[in-house]
Amino acid sequence: MLNLDDLSRLKGYRFPRTVIGYAVWAYHRFALSLRDVEDLLAERGVAVSYEAIRMWVAKFGTQFAAKIRRDRPWPADKWHLDEVVLKINGTKHWLWRAGL
Image (cartoon, rainbow, N blue to C red; front, side, top):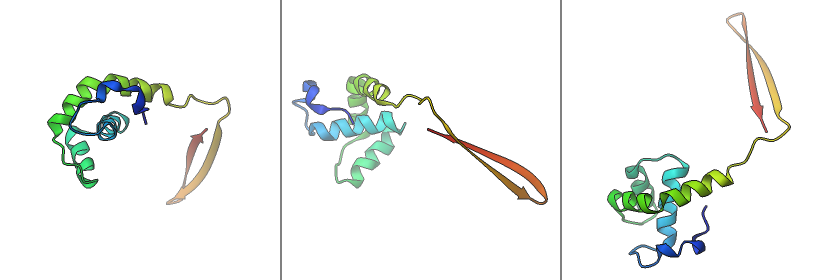
């Protein structure tokens, strides 16, 4: 998640920086709707409206999205491939899976 110490602009809000940061991070990282993020915070005991989350995303979202893109792992030089052959109703089917 984003280092919240760098975001001094989060001072002076009703909710702590960790709550604002988590809401904006979850919205961008998992492509959740505003109401899904509201429900996610409600499960953790934080009562915040989706409208407040929308304002946080509009104000701080670009910083969080840029940080998430920078931290995304780049493809490696080596890939591991896995091949599985399945027989379904007498017909062979191949399933390939690739991973880093």
